[in-house]
Length: 146
Image (cartoon, rainbow, N blue to C red; front, side, top):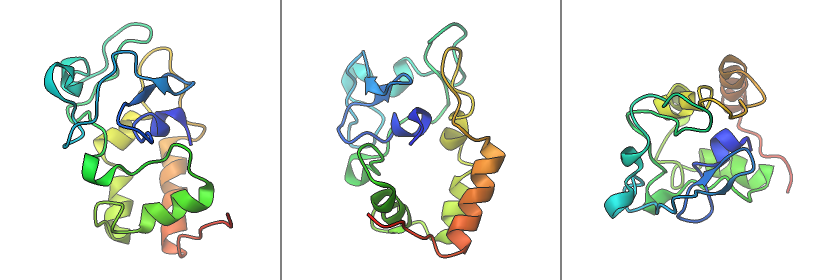
């Protein structure tokens, strides 16, 4: 539920930003492919690497939200709902356990631990996250009660 994760997995079609997960100031829309629409394509501001300076746009060559057909919403989900969604192939991009483990090293996932100046890091290191993620997946992906 870290803002580094939640901001790119919003309930709506506008990404969130900041440690308080407010609506993105530029008002971009998800678009079908998750990369924005018209003049508000993600890559117009989010370059291949972080832009130097306090609260400047973080960067990654693949910057985008999940596509419109599979939004993978984290915002507003209970731990139970999120756990169920993460392992549901119909909602997670048809990822099995092996692909979900590999996803922990996806460039955009890793970008959460390199958010640019002025942003809080997730509460655990990437190594701690990946270890817990693998243990959770391999031990049955328990979904806590609602």
